[in-house]
Length: 210
Length: 242
Image (cartoon, rainbow over all chains, first blue to last red; front, top):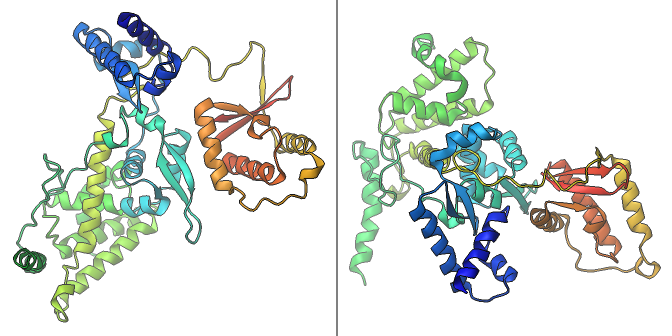
């Protein structure tokens, strides 16, 4: 019986054009057994993994999808011509800002990038990586942008929480290996030293008071 | 200004794709000079920055006003660094933080953007089975044409004609806004991919709903969210999510 269910789910995965959600599977095979389905999906993923074939079961955009292993990209590209619309650096930066800070308006994006971003936003809208959520009720009623499911699918993300944590930047402008430790300012300037001391002082008193 | 050409010539090669904006230029200068981002030698960086702007002028390159805004920010920070510090001490922050903070944020985003790009991108490093249907389901021999404004208005009229008489004077106090309607339609389109014009409306729509929906559709076309085509034979208008 379990094998049967496994085969059914595998066939659904094979046919589905979009990442297949557990809810969708539940409605197709009319069951409420979320845990059971998840177990089967994990079993399938493990099977594909141990078999080491041409594809794997990826968890993307809130669902599951059979995808080819990156090792075989070169051969696939000989078979089909994917439309090689690579995103520019500007588009990737803008997309990153929206992904990490959403919902955002255009001026939020331009504030971080320091340049006009209207054209890039339009391109990202066309590529369906971002969508318009509405308008912000401030003067000018600017459009509010957020990322789409398509974004999660293309960038191989389970959900928005799956986005890698932003890395701290070290004194020389490079991202640090660890992403949690905030960099201590290099105390070479008297001005910097002063601000640091002021920041520390209230913490000390707070520590002693309670 | 006199020293501008010497200062700037080394950067010209990278002009095209590296310095998209003032932030990129600043980051380049900071990395090139290997200076500490928390302790930017503001005089040196400002001089090189202005040298670069002069060079752009000299080469007749159109550059955005953003470069000038950043130049004035740098000059302002430089002058504030020269002023003696007085007043309550807590308010004294290194004036350079005004530039350091956005730089750090920008570097963080640049790193995040690269990290995104290094993922297993669908259609780039990983693939799924291509959808068996073409762009949208179509009978062979079916043809679509781009729909014009007047076809849309005709369709709108025919929806209005279905309106029952008694509904025409009704006021609904809590009408949905165009924005909300756009959001609803986007959800619908994300789900279905395409939808016929008639399906946009409930079987017995009230007037405000029709108008709001129509305005939403126009707005979505303007924003390039949807493509509208009409079937040559049946005349059915269909909206496709772009």
